[in-house]
Image (cartoon, rainbow, N blue to C red; front, top):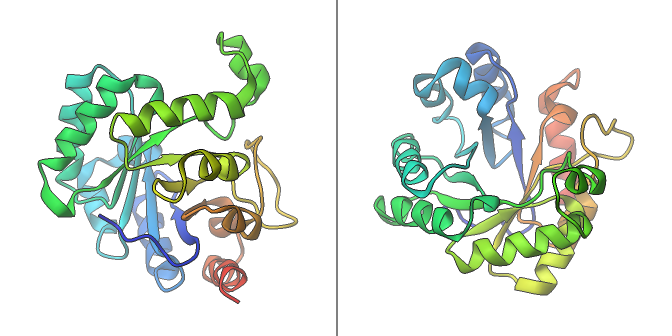
Length: 235
């Protein structure tokens, strides 16, 4: 599995449907980031062959957020493992049996298997959204609830917003890998994220990996933007 960085590492989110754009970003950003994220938008548009084009540049965070019956998720994990991602996401809300099935399927690939990361509450979700779907108590309580469920079922780590990092460290210590989207350098627009923080704040709270997309890829010089964020984390 992927190694835990000494201080929070950067995952560059290559959020595009274009393989050419993704590969150009990958080449430019590889010297400044530790991992590259490909998600549903890219995968659905292009399929596994395009993912394989990006893989040589940096370890891959394949963010497909599987959520289905356990047998289907296990099969999807096996298929995804053929692409040798370093990290792979499932939804914690799928329940313990689904998380266990994903972990067992990944273990079939031995020590080089991907880390199975359970997504708790999406960074675009606020208390009103949770309430509309019948979940009471707000995002923090739901993150803690789903985190405990997922970790007890065998997840290697969690995806959470910056606001829950310290809560999860207090509850579960340094064991779980914490991968954190919703990162916005000071002065950046929040976009469609509702629970955000700066890279430095999130690293100080105990995050392992920071998922950063538009603040890097929408910058006039993405490589320079990534280098500046990396420098702020490792002064």
